[in-house]
Amino acid sequence: MSLAVIVLAAGLGTRMKSETPKVLHPLLGKPIINHVLDAVTPLNPAKTIVVVNPQGETVRTALAGRNITFAVQKKMKGTGDAVRAAARFLRTYSGTVLIVNGDTPLLAAESLRRFVKLHAVRRESVSLLSFLADPPHEYGRILRKDGQVVGIVENRDATAEQLPIREVNSGVYAMKSEALALLKRIRINVSKGEYYLTDIVSIAVRQGLKVGAHLIGSAGEYAGINTREDLCAAGLSLRRSIASGWMLNGVTIMDRDSVFIDPAAQIGRDTIIYPGVHIEGKTVVGDHCVIYPNCRISNCTIGNAVTIKDSTVMEDAVISDHASVGPFAHIRPATLIGEKAKIGNFVEIKKSHIGTGSKASHLSYIGDAEVGAGVNIGAGTITCNYDGLNKHATVIEDGVFIGSDTQLVAPVTVGKGAYVGAGSTITKDVPPLALGLSRTSQINIEGWVPRHAPRNRRKKGR
Image 1 (cartoon, rainbow, N blue to C red):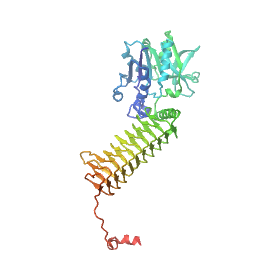
Image 2: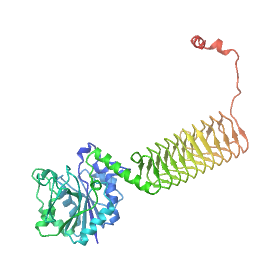
Image 3: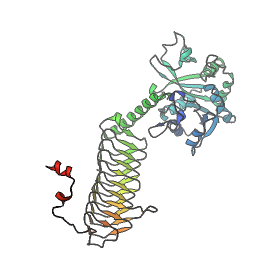
Image 4: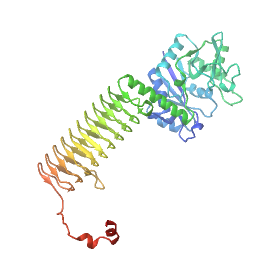
């Protein structure tokens, strides 16, 4: 069965009160419209048409790289007019046309697949996807006579008798390509100055065509985004669904409503996730990990039995099995933390390889460095990797001990098994098994304080 998809994305979204087009507002790491497109893509449409308004260049740019045809709705005259704009690109097309709204990010591919299949099996000219909603609500009511669909009435136009109807329109339609000709018969709604796509149902009925409405899914799946509050509610719904899925697969999540897990992320069994954790992008987390509160992990690969302590930020990094990171650590892109390594509080690592069992327990910066196995890096150590023009590498070989408050001025190598004394500034290579020092001799001047300290300081000290 051939399928074409029309995505209606020309709305101005004035209630969002934003310069950003409504369909481009981010939701769980990607624009609203991308969620919609990701729902229709598994149906393998032969053609996907996105309807934009004349100022829709930002939407075109955001969707660059996708196999999409863009149609422009020149004037905002309603959904019927928007579909007309898309229909111009389907004049020679023969098959099923699926119409969805670009602001409904909770659409499920499986629901759409069932709907399109029912449309085809029942040989309907026009089908609409419906669901049950409890009044009061703003959805269009499905009108039936003797069980058969005869039309849709918008909420604003519904009579007192029609308002209690529970079966409502989701805004998702399927129709034979020949039925697109009915768009020309839609008349403008005088009160709104718009062409309602919903009117195509009653027009098809009057033409003697077969029309059906299919109850699939629930209200939440078809909720549109019109306000920032709607956006927040959709995000919460998605996060809950994703978190619930991982819990069913053996992941412990302490507070489902406070975690953010990207749909593309993967999490292993018996991993424990505390509140406030953000797992973004294509992050992969292994088995038996513990991620403590308020961590943000983006596009990382994390091995098994890794501990990530509170308020740690990690981006585009690899953390090997049994390593420990944090609290308050910053692991920047192109970093690899070796097995059983320990990266402690207030340590920042950038574009570096930390070897097996090595430790940087606190208050250090390691950038553009190759750190071997079994290395101990003392508190306050800095790799001075930038000379104002270029970045340079630091090499710390296996078994090295770096004393606290050391500056390693790159390019520099500390040989295997060497020691660097605390407080040193190392500008030359340290040979293996050597002690590197750069201290001046300590001088104590007896009786200096009484002679030189300020008078008020001497008084405070009494």
